[in-house]
Amino acid sequence: MIRRLNDIDRIFGTMDFFKNQMNRFLEDFESGRGNLSQGGVWPPTNFYDDGDHILVYSELPGVSEDEINIKLHNNLLTIKGERRENTPQGYAILRQERNVAPFSRSFTLPVEIDPEKTSASLKNGILTVKLVKIQAAKPKKIVVQAA
Amino acid sequence: MSTEREMSKPAQDSPEVLKPGKTNTPDVDIFVNDDEILLVADLPGVGKEDLSINLENNTLTIEAAFSAGFSGTCQRREFDAADYRRVFTLPKGIDVEKTAAEFSNGVLSLHLPKSSAVKPFQIKVESN
Image: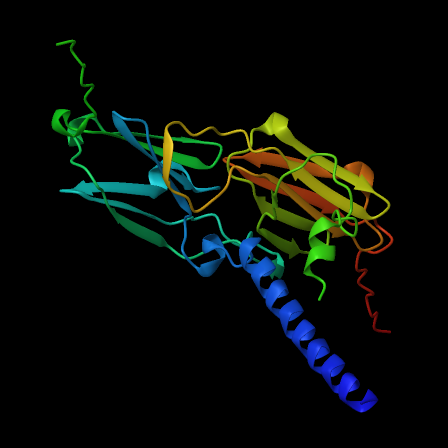
């Protein structure tokens, strides 16, 4: 009888072990380790919508205005470029984590954009592309009338 | 089974932080030559005034507040507006007084000059 209880205990012990492993795996997953920016997709880009515009934010530290090429063709937005400042002369590399490769990303936009009104700015290493929606794509307010 | 116990227990084993929230680890390059160590860090979305570099007992701490703002509702997110923090242990022989930093376009360049005692010294062989 005692032996059997020990067996049951051992089975529960094993189950606990697997559950802890699983929890640890899920915690890693939820805490965002291995997020997109580390997966080789560069630059990381956020999309925001404020009703009349679509705002695109890209992290481009150390990239100057003339090194960025933004193209809008139909509904395809392409952000392309290259960070030219690389290894400084006369130095040996101890560690290199910053992206050095030329980059290019394309996005299909969900609504139609007025290409004439598009503008872009670069501040503190963040590129902001402001895309103006065409009139038909802007949200409309519907007024409820009393009958 | 231990789930209930763990869930009711406050997270005591993690160290206390003064400011809650997630911090990002900036990507860095580290270069070295005979005269100095050059540390280059990507800190996009940070203004010059939001940057703090602290050197204490061979520990270098870089902290920066993310100050760029987003407007509207988020449709797709690949980076967070989180503050940056990274800590380095420096080798001995850094001339702390002469440390210099530059910051432009979201990139920090930190020059850490070696003190003369650890600089390589060439010995000339003289022929008789």
